[in-house]
Image (cartoon, rainbow, N blue to C red; front, side, top):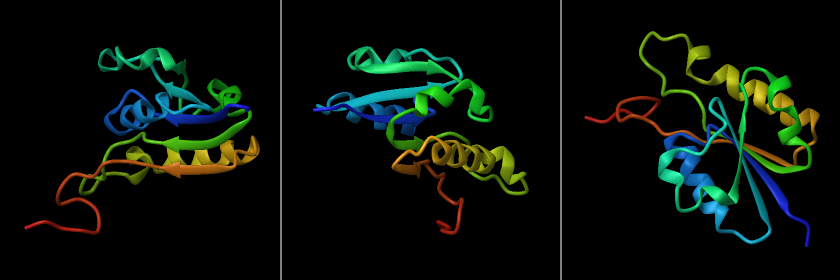
Length: 127
């Protein structure tokens, strides 16, 4: 059975590392992380060997393009939650758009964005 490649942008972060930890234990999945450091974070000591850690800039497809070759799925978990008055481009929108464009050029079957939210941010407000 051929491995299905799943590429996670921001694999060193909270959401990205949780996704990679799950993928690392799935038979038939090749988990690839693209992050600025290109190395496994300290909290990945028990499962990090099952992930292909690559350095790349999410805003520069030339630094990660080959990671998308043959990708069955792409997950973006980069950026920060929206802050009041902040430029949305600084909060990951540009990163997600460029990642989707690069995934489409490489004919990835699926592309998804995952991120955490702070209470009180986004369309839902908490008292």
